[in-house]
Length: 259
Image 1: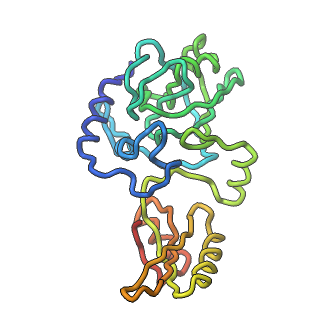
Image 2: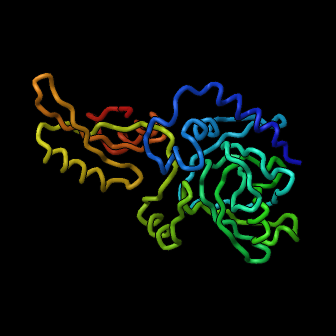
Image 3: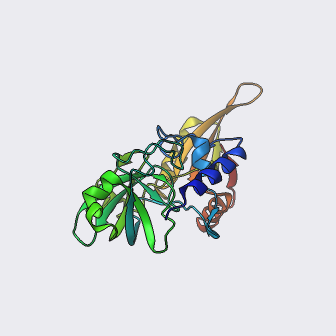
């Protein structure tokens, strides 16, 4: 039986320690119409249920997981989910133990071929072997209302309520430009120029290295008003990831920044 009341306690405790939200101002990644930035960050922290520790992880489109799916309905209808919204058993949502809130996933019942797309807005199911707990509506579309549980595949198809087509996902995997959820503000300064044209050329150059990271130009003015254009490569999940990228791409003059 799912211990949802424990999750409510966990989330309240986590929120009590939060003083800042998502530093990287990207609505598609953290501050969405469903989940506040602070709640997003809180639900990405490790937590413990029934003596077992769970560590939420980042994901990217095209990522697939297989296991057992269950469903939950009337008992929890109208109660709060882990991201703070009210659970509606007639909506297409689901609970997952570690994937980020508002991740869009395609759930396919491998036993009857039925599939549906749901948005993760809760934590669970805390039963051994089960990887996702679908809402009543999604469960019914998968045939779980009759089967109870079934073996499924769960594929990431988007974030923040928006999905990508199979063709887009396949292309992004080929070109290694998969979209992924980000809850950080780490970046690398790759250059600084007095002339905007120089900064623009660097922005184009670093925009072709790895589509997961976004090159931006920031203007700073000296005390005398002269502009300096800094080129930042943003989108790293941690300082270590940014440093590894700089080392792997032979960027000795680059340094880590936060925005």
